[in-house]
Length: 136
Image 1 (cartoon, rainbow, N blue to C red):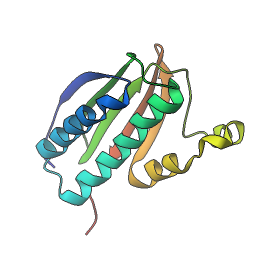
Image 2: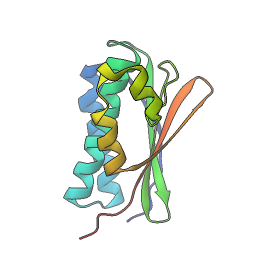
Image 3: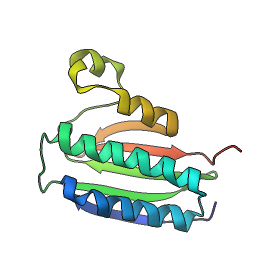
């Protein structure tokens, strides 16, 4: 994987912004030198998380920011995803019991395609997403 450094870029938490979010994600993947399978994995994860931010985190389209940045860590692509929705750890399985109607399958998908970790600080939900290279 090529060394990359993408500083935070922000997008409005609107479904209409999804194409811009995915175009930015593709540019990250291209610069990192990911193959098609790896790129599709990253795109799927970012699409799922962004859609959850808009639909569940904010409950609708709004102008609140979502930040995406990227870099490398020990051969892994690392994407940092932040939003200002109310604090919510999607990786906490207690959350599934509190709001089971939301679904939860998307987060399972995220956990299978990436190595996510969560923290809440400075008014932001932050997901660090590590994407190890695909094993052929």
